[in-house]
Image (cartoon, rainbow over the protein chains, first blue to last red):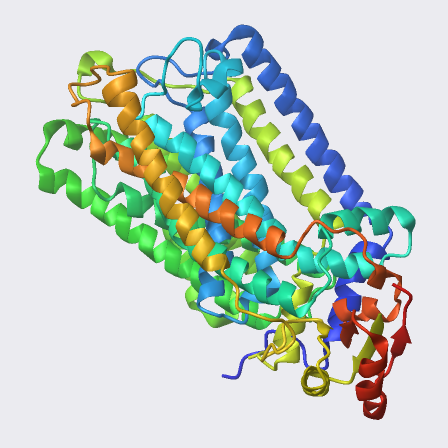
Length: 446
Length: 163
């Protein structure tokens, strides 16, 4: 069956530039934007109140307690960084494979990555007993003549996140430069000219600038792809390096990378589909994109399903009594609904996308994406809480219940993500104008 | 300074070649990279700079961890030896990534002499089309020989700007 091209026929470099720039420069801020931004700010306020309470009362304000010493802090951290990783995969991996469909969605995926990584970075800092000393993680010369503990996996996380956030921000900004230069040259108001002029840093599209731009962009894309795999593998290693039944497994690094891809593709869909309708992007986000993203989500879901099977297989293959007891608890104990819901939302629901007719329906695709996003959060809950509440020693068993501060902090990060993403949608081009121009100009529109 | 526009990449590259044959250097301004970039001299060393910085900072990160755990602050952690190289790899890798990405971006800015928020060509309305669908060139040198080469090609627009 023939597919739509990745851009509607009739689009030219000029029309693409004008239409995408007009979304930012000429449109009145729509009502839906104000409503969504207001909601995001309200959630951010709840988050600020929760974090203020946490700083005032200490980590006892959270539900974390022995033996479940990790709770929402670790769940949310892993969940957010997974979402971020999925965005990078869309953006950098499919840049290297020269996939034409990537051009319409890479800016949204990269922006999602930036704000999701910011949300993830908050949790390791606020979970510290004295968060104002977070900079002790930096190996800086100090009067105490102390060093960070380089043999601890927790320090791996710190440097991995630092490298990831920095590299993602540079990758995003470099990709934006030709586009904000286009906005600078189209803007009519003085404030807009100054704003986009400063952001463009003086990019003018000279031959030398383009050649160096492509060299730098290609190098960074080449680094980002293995980096994103390494970052989420390191998050997986944090668990696998612990001698805890349910965590101590060599499959954790790839298992986490597949999960990251699933949640990341899910969020891309959840954001892309409403934006397509609200901003009128149907000429740039066509049925081809829905089909490809649906297939990607399905593939990630199948990979995650395989990992769930191996997770169960390992329990019985290893023969460990604690492992078996722990697994029995996961599937039939206090947190069993979390386990079964995880399977339903991450494995069963995405199977709907096997049918092309369903894959091309935006509301089905969006619902499946949302299911995967929620399912991945539940998976992280199961991994962190359900595992820790039944470890090796029966004397070290206990339950976990999150407090309002836990939920408030999660809501706060959702608000931060939403507010940041909405500001991006309002003030920066949501589709890469320069790449779109090149794709249309050189006739690579599939 | 002369600004001249052409209908497409082929005509623009032809004009650049003619100017070069007459001993005049021109800078292209285009909506996307020219397929065969004749407009700018030399190839870019950005990938090499990124590789060098990545390897250098990666090695420095590894060396720093050796120094910290073996000499400056040896501490018995979980029975691990002071020189525990497998544990250093992740940190060293991420240091290398930070170095390579920062170097690639830094080299891009330095080689292009950015940020440069204003230059005389910004006064030309025609040059703004380069970020839309304009295929333009800019000649910074003496105007007379450039004018002689460009006039017969009927460029549109054609502007002479006081630099």
